[in-house]
Each structure stands twice: as structure tokens, then as C-alpha cells.
Length: 128
Image (cartoon, rainbow, N blue to C red; front, side, top):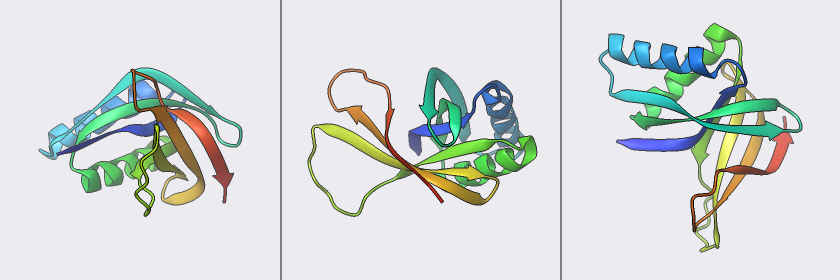
């Protein structure tokens, strides 16, 4: 089982989308649990997002998150994309796509300190 904390839902829709994701997982008997963790990320190009974490199968999580985006007509951040090069850095990096439904509308580079309990922050963003 994998988990990720670099997924987000357009602000003010987090609670209803996370509830829907957990209900769908329960109905379909899928091992997936999502929960908000009280962190909001602001982007210049895409607006504010409530970040959430999930535990379960990555492919199923991605499919359900895209379905939720279509159903609630909201933008999402789909994280967990890693660079090809493996370089040791003092900070953790993660890459995410900003989507509306299945359409990718941008990309984000997220950064957090390897030491301490720092939250993810936007390092770079790009529109498509």
C-alpha cells in the first residue's frame, strides 16, 4: 500500500470530496482511505487547494480522484510524480499535475524540508 500527501482539492470542496472518495471506496470494497490534514496551498495560476492524504492503491486513488473532479466540477492536484534523476538534496521534492477532470491544466513542483515536520510548499508552477 502506498500513501501520498501531495494531493489537493480546490478550496471549500475538500470535505465533500474526501467523504465521497471514502464512500466510493467502501461501496466498491477498495482499500483506500483519504483524509484532510488541515494544510492549504495557494498557487498563483490555479487558486487555493486543501491538501489531503490517502492510503491505498495508487492507480485506484488516481482514478477515483479524477472521477471526483468531474463529479464536483473542481480542480485537483494529483501528486506523487518523481523526477528521473536521483540526487540527494536537503529538501524533499514532489511533482504534481493540476487537473480539471481528465484534462491536465498545469504542473506544480512541491518542496518540504527533510528534517522537522514542515508542510509542502509550492516551489514552482507552470500552466499548460
